[in-house]
Amino acid sequence: MERKTIYKDLGNISYKIAWIYQEEIFGELLNAKKNEIDSVNYLLFCEHPPVFTLGKSGSEANLLINQQVLAKKGIEYFKTNRGGDITYHGPGQIVGYPILDLEQFGMGVKQYVFALEEVIIQTLAEYKITSERLDGSTGVWLNTLGIRPQKICAIGVKASRYVTMHGFAFNINTNLNHYQFINPCGITDKTVTSLEKELGRKIDLAEVQSKLKNNFVEVFGMEIQK
Image 1: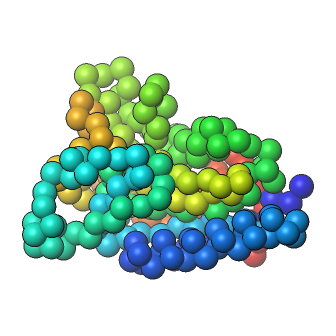
Image 2: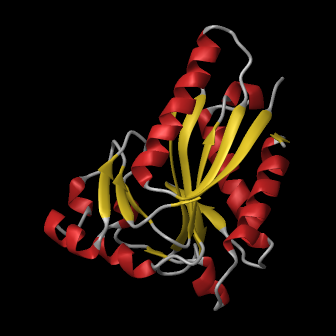
């Protein structure tokens, strides 16, 4: 079974342009699958300028500021076609968009989300940080037995015919102050954190991306194309 995957670092790119690019690749994979043509998978990493995105099942009430305040603060806002509620993307955060044919990897959608979480958990372990899943809440969490568990990575995906798009947002050196303007993922009794906050120092994004890529290979059995 083909698991060949093209890896691309898109750098700092607007959310809209990255979304359009994802849709193009997603459409190509779906068309190849429909016509029983072999296709290659994609693993895209990037950063975005400040933006809030709302999933198709989310509530606009979880955006706590209006359009005028958004504009003043230089934060964009998009309603998207991924699952989940509202989240934040911004500089210092690694956003990953795996566009995969899950049937090549022998996975269903639930297994896929579990595997995405595992990639993040293994990456955090390399920084001596213990992280976990939290029942009923997708993503990767710290301090799950505490009063207010902390989310360090949000996950929201779309899948059609077992082809995926959208993905994860992993807080590295993220400006956590922007989360005060939303109820992240629609949750009010939990909070957010970042790798920088947990380690008390700035982290090299390229270093984290390299670890993430290696863990995708390990967890998914990918063959990264040179």
